Structure formats: C-alpha cells, structure tokens
Length: 225
Image (cartoon, rainbow, N blue to C red; front, top):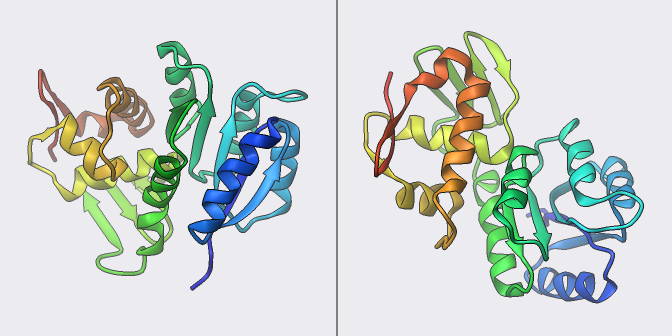
C-alpha cells in the first residue's frame, strides 16, 4: 500500500518537527516548507502530495495566499494550523476552501487523527458504488467529480464529502451533530457554523440544484429530490 505524503508549511522549525515526528510515527511521508511561497513551490513540484497542513502567519507569503494559490489548481485536503482562533479567521479559512481549522496549541495526536479522517475515504474510493445520482446531480466517487446537468462543478474536498453524504442519505433529517461526526469523521467540538458555512458555499456552487439541500430550522438539513 502506498504511503500518503503530507506537506507541512510553518515558519517555526520546532513546530514543523513536532508535527513531522508524529506523522512519521503514524506511517506518513512528510515534506516541509518554511513559508507560504516555499509551500506553493513544493506542492507544484510534487503531485504525490495528498494533504497540506498550512500555518497562517508566515513570511514571504502568508497561509491565506498560499491556500488561495493551491486551490487554483487542486482540491487537495487542507488543514489550517494557526494561533488565531477568532470566528472571522475561521470563516475566512472555510471561504478559501480549507477543510479543517485547528488553533494552536493543539494535541499532535488529534491532528494526526484528523489527517487520517480526511484521507480515509480516499483510500476506499474503489469499493462499493462509484457513481451516485440525484435529479440533475451526478457524483463520480472515483474521479472525485460532481456534475450538475452534465456540467462539472468545482468543489473542495470537504464540499464533495458533504454533498456525497447528503445524497447517500436523501430524504432523511440530518442533525448538525450527525453531519459533523459522519463527514468530518471524528468527534467535533466546534460550532454549528462549520456546517452552515460549508452548506452555504455548496448551495452557491450547485446553482438551482443547491435548493435540494433543505434547512430544518433548529436541527440541521435534509436533501430532497
């Protein structure tokens, strides 16, 4: 089985080493970058990178701009690692296509668990049903591509996982807690805005098909054809 390669971008050498040591112990390969520009260059040079862990405050090019550059060419899962924990910063990360947002200080073991959770479905993409349909929506699991009325829709990794979960459970009332625990695949202790922000972006990208995601006030969401 091939080992996943993780790119760590952080200007603090001590932090990079801490994260690297835990990832190596978990069986991952690791590439390091000391600033945002270095991260973008190394990502471009290595198509085998499966996930990016990105700090925000870095010299030369900060994490926000580095993520923006990577998102122009890839939907690779991205975890934002930062000392800033304000709501507006977290929402900014999600708006750029960040899949996870972890504030420092953090548990390296939890970080590794989140990395494993984000990569879990990718490793099992060849099993089970590979194409899902719902009205004008087609989800190609293996290609990790969504189509609406036969037109491709560019979704981030987490948006793709969220839509797939909705379609797999169409007609069912889904609480925010169930969505978080199923799609994020770990016990999430954050706020409901994580779900709401992703749903808002997903609806916008899906056009009229986005109306199939119904809000259940005070509870969560339901996908209806």
